[in-house]
Length: 296
Ligand code: C5P
Image 1 (cartoon, rainbow, N blue to C red):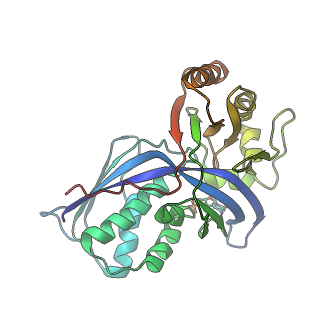
Image 2: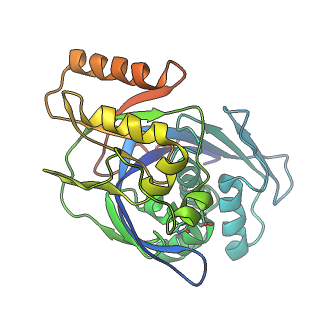
Image 3: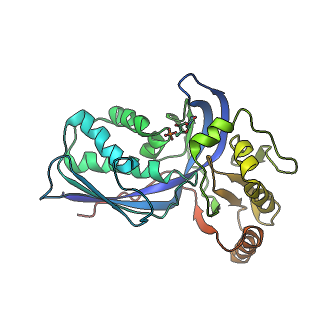
């Protein structure tokens, strides 16, 4: 096999509770992460003419840097630390998950590269070692390596898979034109105050609880996200709404049976609240990621 194409799903955090800042600067947290049908596509190939250790990366989103700082390239370098220089590789990411969105796109691409390049190059790296490499790249990369609904603790890398089928929930993702830098959101967590009139309290639903401690700092700087959340929560057909991760995506989970007319009304309300310059995406949660496929 000389080429491989894997899907790299997005995620949402249904809950994210922060407990304390650790000595290493990370924050101890508990979070439930759920994969989505929305996914990037990551193509990997061995380049016959290229030198060992060479990585040529391209991306459909030309605003994304494709150099050594890209998490997908970092995943190749992490494997090379264990197995030595790999054959010259081509990586292409067809980007469908917006970045700076709290949807884990970059981390998911990195997990797909870890899995895909290990297979493509026959790297002798077992699952435990791969998971260790994933945690070194980013706190939520191990989650994407696992591929199922997980409760995560530590800085997000310690996973407890949620057993049993998780309901297939209809989800609307809403991302405004700006992204939120994750380190900044965590830095502000301890000191940021709540803004009056915005909803932060847990929403208890049949399938779990929606709550996110990073809403406090992020809504303080971007109240528009808090107002959008409140508007979504009040709409007919919406079971609950929350910011995902460190934002800036706010998502709505629909009630079972909400039809196309209800969804159209929700979309219209979102555009009325935040304007036309917004990225909207209807998707579903999945219990476990499938769809990893060989491209030949
Ligand atoms: O691990 P990751 O690279 O995704 O984290 C990005 C940044 O977010 C970290 O450098 C840190 O500032 C912050 N972070 C944190 N606590 C976590 C996860 C991330 O403070 N549990």
